[in-house]
Image (spheres, rainbow, N blue to C red):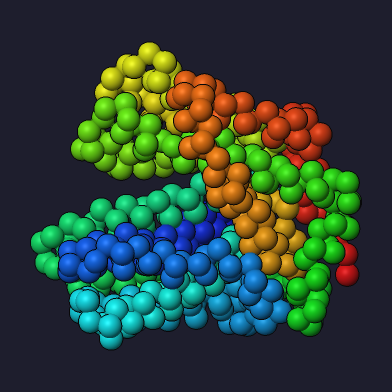
Length: 423
């Protein structure tokens, strides 16, 4: 029993550490770099182009099959890629401390190239992180593992986002970048000593198989009728989150809250609530299983959205703001934990890099494409009705869950089953 418990803690520690590795370069290439350029007097029009360097995070699904086809054998097929990317990212982040932001074209070109290299390597690391977590965790540990990964990711965001700006204020911007590089370097020993993966039964042997195999395998396993329903569930399960997040800041500004109040509550307070929700979600998942967690956490998410309706309807002031943000982020942490566990359950270890990237790409559409009309809807119907609409956006997911994740069963129908592994 002690060995089993020790193995579980090793796995959870490993995925938490890789969550830190995933969050660190993302914050360096966005918030930290934007702050440095702004402080250096670079025009806002040029700073606004920085998000273009983050396109690799959106496009990573196109090269995810390469990691399935050509695994790096040491330490294992997933940690080999993890280690390689981390050994590249650490010096790249450290080298950014040597750059001198200015309006000089050569300086801006160097910064742009560094940001692009950072994003490509970070997105590739994310592919490997997701695949390693998916392949490593047994079913019972998916919820706690998803919670641990999210906690590590959020902790890195807080350390680099808040801590980086504090270091920059006291010691200068190069110190902030060097500290971020040190944080990522601290993960490298965890990557080397993390638990090894079991050899995959039918390794991918051709690029054609790596590209076409994930879709064929998923369709074979789930069946054509259930496959599209599962993909719709992935698309729609967090749609209420996307709609709310698209309009939360404009709503609070138009309600008369100050920038300081919004920053205080949406910054550290919201992150703390999300981390608490993630822990609660992981603990509950381990007790009640996948399907019941999907139902209960989705209901909690609806309640979180409805707190914004109450804030808009009754104008409860700053106390209401704290309550709304707390409940919304607490439930959001729970929803995020079970959602990551759902994506892991839908992946076959043979193709986990590609399948997870595809599934997360489908989910991203709900944050971008499906949430794009949020401003138009809010402007036409008013804030109270808009927030009711965000809660109602959960109904399609609930209808799908009646078929795919019934309360009385532990696992989603169509989740990975080794006995149905198509070769």
